[in-house]
Length: 108
Image (cartoon, rainbow, N blue to C red; front, top):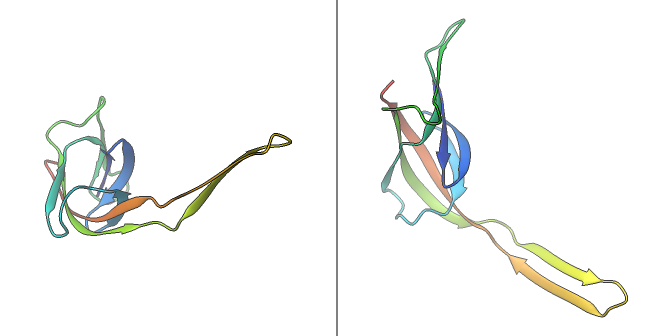
């Protein structure tokens, strides 16, 4: 069983027990989150599992998650230049992220 959820403007595949790397969440590690923007739910196992697609969201289904940790990605360098014009700009960036663990998909 899995669900496709929209979280902070991006889409993720959420399965029970899965760890997702998402944009930084303003919550302490160990706190819980509820995601109610569920785009698709696939329930059950077998030859033809039932798939419920929302328009745009599936009503009554929530995904619970807990914040595991926070971190930063490796640094990337943004370098701009224009040839023959003596224009150079160098800038670094480290994207912050959070690791969340999917607990349960409720309302199926």
